Image (cartoon, rainbow, N blue to C red; front, side):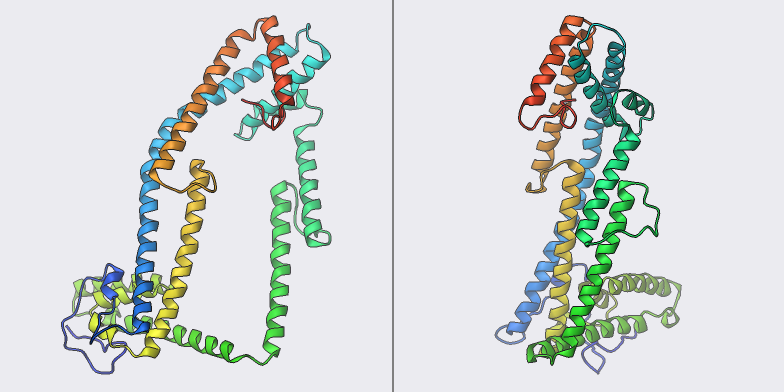
Length: 386
């Protein structure tokens, strides 16, 4: 097979090529003499860090993919049963409120509970609950939505220091929020541009000039790696259909890696395409090592940010606290807690549904709800147990 010139050397290498570049470890620099230089050591440390971050990302994805079906298999039926019980409770309260025998205070408590429960079902898309909510609430759903929208608008305008424009249709809380966030981003962009303009007017320091030079060298290196791959993997240079297919796959991977600035993946493709080898990488000049190390540092930072975002999404999906570590043990523990909670709630609700038809029990139950509503952190409108 014809070999393209190595990225860092002008002559064609005849040394044996490494075809397995699936791990960042394959790119590690090995000492050519007694020891690695500080730059080579930093290069290797960043490779190790990137490899660990990628492994953590994959392991978390696999952990969630394994946990998700179990999570939904256990909790979905419980949630559905819970919604059915809530629905039955709403109809029971509606029926009881249409009869006489309750004091005005008892009616207010029962109506507040009914509205709270109906809201739980409305957010799930239960249209029938909207009419029942409006029947007993002093404020209709549309009025509540209008009030929430105005509150959001007031908050956004306070943050912006001026009124929101009415160029767009602002009909929901989310519309107002999105419009406000757009304005905030635009305002921040204007401030950022003003800061950058002021900085550009100043004479750059030696450190800033060096940082700019380092970044420029890094960008040049990234483009050079990609362009060599693009040249070597062009389908017209394939000797047969199998080779053309192989190069097409590698080029597709190279395009994706370049788009996400994944230097490690590009170098791994170079190894697989037999365009370089680990010995050649280890012989790079210090300036080339420094440029690639800067790219690796930026790639590691991006991976850390992505991993942090992934952890946040996993916690939201499976109900973990913001401070809890995402682990198999914690996912399973939280699943058991949620399962126990729903089973306990269902047992209590089913017991109440059986006995609330009795007037004496119903009035005692309302009295309990009034007492609970006065306890700290309890509110029959916002934190009622069902």
